[in-house]
Length: 182
Ligand code: SAM
Image (cartoon, rainbow, N blue to C red; front, side, top):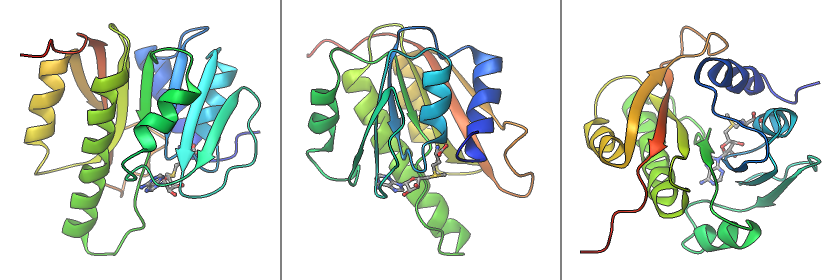
């Protein structure tokens, strides 16, 4: 069985947007307890590399390390575990909520922005990016960066995401490739 309710969110997003293809390399940010990694492997991902603050019981087909994605050398640590550029970077990272909605919102966007910075450094051309964001405000900057880097940017709230939560996912596809240094 799936280890998390979150697994159903990725299943629904993938059914709709066809993000996971056989053999692809996938990065899973905020992987615990491992539901998204299970789904990616089940749907044929060749190699899944993930990270979480919490330890994750082994998921066959995935390599998940314990650590903080905010750690400055985390991007390099993840890169070293991959044998080439990933085709999908997905982030379901969410900080512990404070109960103060504006604070929670800013924190989640901070993590999503960090995930996006990483994605544009590492994704293979044509690759995709998924990240958990929140509805309303302060996403404009991130949206602009997404539109510069990807051919298509959409938002979706999968049915498995609780209606009362303002959680939303951004789905960016057709990565244009790293901008040439100027
Ligand atoms: N997608 C997962 C699944 O299907 O099992 C569920 C992920 S859960 C909603 C969010 C995770 O983000 C938590 O396990 C949390 O520890 C992790 N997280 C939050 N901040 C993080 C950070 N700075 N670095 C790594 N993981 C982080």
